[in-house]
Image (cartoon, rainbow, N blue to C red; front, side):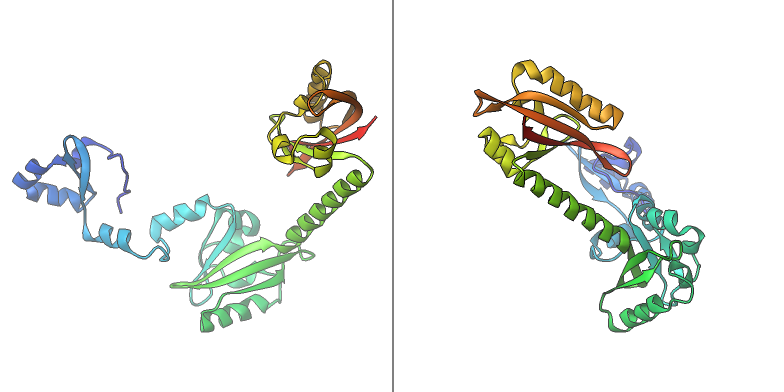
Length: 292
């Protein structure tokens, strides 16, 4: 099927209304191969296309794409998606699924390669979903890492089942680290300190209520403010250097500076900075401020 676009690819598929009427047979033949854009005052206004294209365009959005369009869609997806035929053979897999499962998600491969050897939980659940039409989520041990659990969301589709797969153990670990992170922030505040998360552009993405109380600025005003704007002008260069050093060396930094209180008064504080990492990359800086 030809790709629909608001910008026609070339003049060979553009025609004026008058020329279309005079040579309809020619343009009808061209429209059977690719959409023809009918011009009005020099700009495309209407489209002449085949019935197959119209059926595809007007089909319900819930209907999944097929053929090359489906392959392109799966190739673009980093999430783990696996498509199954009614006999549970694999008919397609996303880029993310192929990276994780390898040959086990090749087209035509059996379902057994998606979970630990001997585990029939997934197969049984798919049969239930196929019979009832009701989506279901289960957990099974990973075929690659038996100590880790995978969560399988199973949905019934028009041509079989769709599996959306996530690393359930990773989700639990992520929640654990979030809870730990939150607890550390709360402990810092209980000790009289203030916390902030600063993005790589040096602007505050998160400001704790204690930072608002310490500076006299609202949390809304602090959010998106530059970190260096919180300290005395004479200390901004040192704070900027410490911020860059934290990112470049991936190591904690600590300096003393004069914190602006209410935009005027100064209070000497110690500022600690540590790199915020995600998947091995520095994505920001965690900042803790305590009275010196």
